[in-house]
Structure formats: C-alpha cells, structure tokens
Image (cartoon, rainbow, N blue to C red; front, side, top):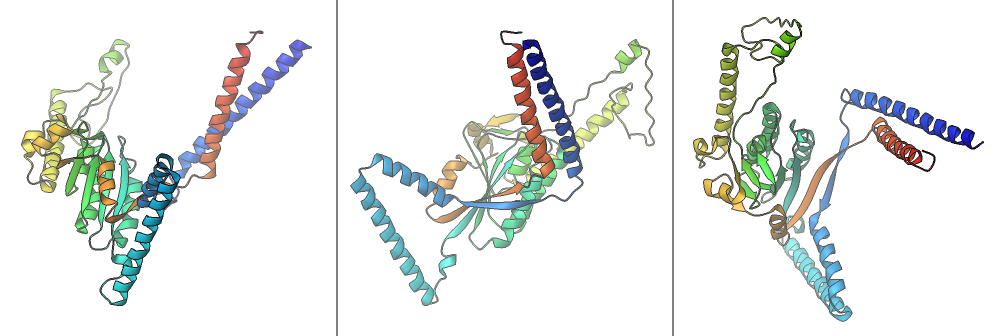
Length: 351
C-alpha cells in the first residue's frame, strides 16, 4: 500500500508538472503574439514632495518627544495656512494665480539594455509631460545605461531632443553608468550631473563576430552565401571572410563613429570631442575634468534640492499585462514549486 501511495503521489506531481509546462508554452506563444497588438498601458504620477514629507514625519515622530512633535506639526500647519491665505489674496488682486506659484520638476527614468527597450516607455512619458509644461518647469532624466545598438539609442536620443527642441530645461543624472549609447542620450541634456564613481564615456563603436568557416571545412561541410550587391555582406559567420570585406566592415564602423562624434559635438559644443572619443571610460570626477559632465551630484541630492521651491513629480509609463502574460508568470511559479516539491520528496528517506 505504501508503494501505491508513493507511486500515486509521484504521478500526481508529474501530471502537475506537465500541465504547468503546457501552460507556460501557451503563455509564451501568447506573449509572442502580443507584439503584433497595440501597446496598452497608463501613466502613473507620484508627488515626491509628499513622499519625502511623510518620511520626515515618521522620523520626527520617532526621534522627538510627543510634545515637541505635536508643536512642530502645529507650527507647520499654521505656516501652510498662512501661505495659502497669502496666495488667495494675491490671486484676488490679479497679481498671481495660486496654481502657477510653484514651478514643477518632472522626473523620468531610463534603465537601458542593449536594445534600449525602455524607449517605448520614455516616448509615452515625454508625450504626457510636454503638453503640461509651463514656463519655469524642468525635466530630470535619471539615466542608467551601458549602451547598445546604435539605431536603438539613436531613437532614444531623438526622444530626448523633443524636450530640448521645446526649449524645456533638461537635466540628465547618472548615478551608475552612461556609456556609449548611454552617453549619446546623456549629452542631449543641457546639464549632466554624475555621481563621483559613475562610469561615463566609451565614445566608440564596437562589433564582433565569430567565424566557423575552418570548423565547417574540417568536417567537409559546404556553406554558400548568395548576395546581390558587392557589400551586401562583408563579414559572415560561416563563409570565408576576405581582407576586402574586413576593410569595408571597418570603414562602416568608422563612419558610425564619425556620426557619433558629430552628434556629441552638436549637443556639447564646448567639449573636445576628439580628445574623449577614444572608446575610453572615465569615472565621474575625471569625467568632470575633461568636460563630459557638468557637476558631481547624485540624482537624490538634486531632487531634494528642488523640493523646497518646486513641486516634484515622478512620472512613469506602466505597461498593462495581458491575461496571457499573467498566466505565463503563474505557470512559471507553479513549475518552480512542483519541481522543488518533487526534488524534496526524492531527497527524503525513501530516496
């Protein structure tokens, strides 16, 4: 009986595992089809003034005596009421509208991968913010990216150009890294701030490709590549590469590098581009010396400086998850639990 019980338990777990795998496969297929659908999502906005105020209140409540905390809160509420009353008085006199008294800082984030996938979200965020910009408002982009595909980061940089073309002050903050395509984006900002040890630069172009031609020859495998156009393919994975093809490939890299340098020069005319466009990287302090950044400061310090005089809003586009994607994630979790349970059972006393 014990054997039958163990066998039944194992069979039930195996069926659960197979069913979960099938669910994952169906979820993956559905997600792959999602790219053919319209992108759906929504803008989320959070007022950072309230976030930091709440944090301060929690600390004050903890570290101060109850009477001192109550007195401080009472004094703050009194000051706020006085300011609101003064604002209404100015509004009645026609001198100033309360709504326009404080300027705004909009905070956007870009976390870059090799394909600059976050560009889609950045596009939506910029499209949402630009119509609401008033004179004196600014935008801060918190940028983190080691770079990637030229055309992808070119598009991301063009999205940022929409801000500067609208004559809206744009500050780019780099806390960790803005290299290669990441720096291409950063240089669009009128001002770049950087943490002291952030990685900046890498203004160069890289391409690498393996070649399996000799391996195929060794095993008597023929490979044919048919093209129309002398330079339709310069270097290949499986064909025999030629010196002429290599020369053309390097020529294309140099052309791309020249475009890269020209773009940076247009956006940072005071920078000695030839001096820094060597593919090297600089840490924040050294980047400041060569002119790649304008100031050493973290994004957190910059935001907190603005809280006193500006209303600071964090804006992000949130992608809506379709039911297929949620199903795939749930199935993946179910598989992990089933595999773990099966492993634990097989490792038990009866193993």
